[in-house]
Length: 393
Image (cartoon, rainbow, N blue to C red; front, side, top):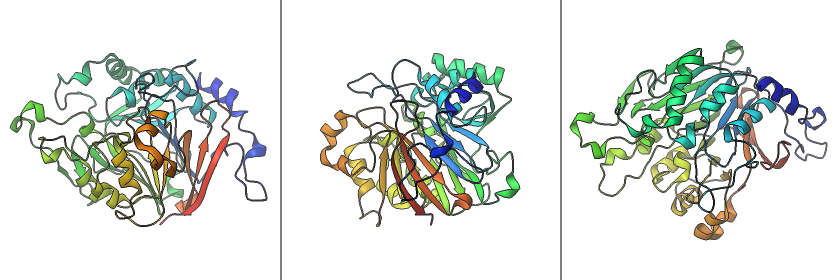
């Protein structure tokens, strides 16, 4: 199925549109990946997170495949439309950009806006290695955890056992679980560092980690780590370019809850400065604290939006604050809706883009990077806006 989709849609991405015109204008149609470049696609279906990465040697990585959210007015409209499921749109998108199979798929955590579409994606396209936070026992923080009883999770777990060549538990501290599979020696400056899983965070030294959460037996069950707190996080580096993605980790504990529910602050210390960062928890009010913003200081903030509370007003205020870090930055959202504008107001005018697939293209050796916003109302891969190039620092 994926190969048929690839043949049908790749014809849309015409060779004549692969480069900018002589007057410096961006291409009207997205330029397909070429060896040596790194492409990071933030795919908008209106129903959750889905990021696809084409690594410098052609190795492929899918981070999450969501099918959650709520119908309007609280939620966004499906994209491109409601004629297909989020999984179908994701698979068609993958085929169109040249992915006939997936080398690595990674689930940041088991909420349906991050994993609800993954079972159907797995039925449509081959996945060689599946990484999640709990394989193979799925017993943390508790075997009775409610997220482990949902039908989409049960379908996912069974498919991992039946179809995936290699299921693996994501191990924080390691830098060898996601590697270039086709031509690693040509790109020694590429690395994916596992930063966080289940409250175990990399220290920044070798493979060393430390625990953020106390032993579960020592705290009331009402204070146990949430599914969001247990999310995976990675830092991807290609030369001087660095990128962060980390599921839904929170940084602002609810009133009366223990301070260790702030996962962002200790993680920020080891992630450090990056060129681009996906917002934790879609920019929800419990995320993106001041320490996080000050430590990461990205040029590009990426917000996957499916709800009217993405992002919170004060979260956007922190992201834009030059008191927290100086210099330019661009905030890009996949699917901002009218309800956000009612709450946030004119501050939304400062977004560099509020609608569309967001693609970061990193040049060979990671020296520079650009952003392309793609029309999400059809499968034309029409470029609606381009930013950069920027120098990686």
